[in-house]
Length: 87
Image (tube, rainbow, N blue to C red; front, top):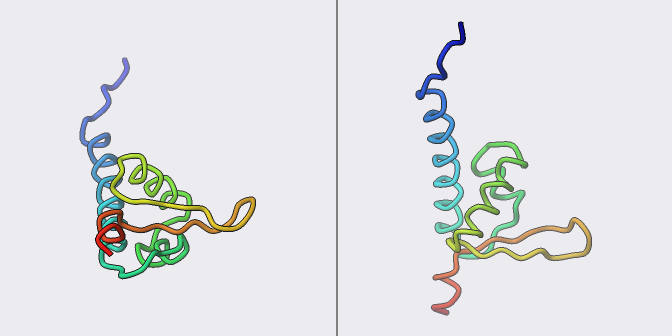
């Protein structure tokens, strides 16, 4: 007999994803200048791949802007759209 999947596990994973996104967004909003991916990774204390996925999600939702600088797998910089446009 198969056991049903508990909704709490799925919900918990979703909550963790949202919490990480909120942490990242808060760090970028608090910054007065664009941040590199490495700086964000160190600030939220999570793996680089998770941080990158959340950054790409936030960029897709148009909450932040991002740009790759350098060639190949260069460094990405991230900033909040509303702060840059006011200047």
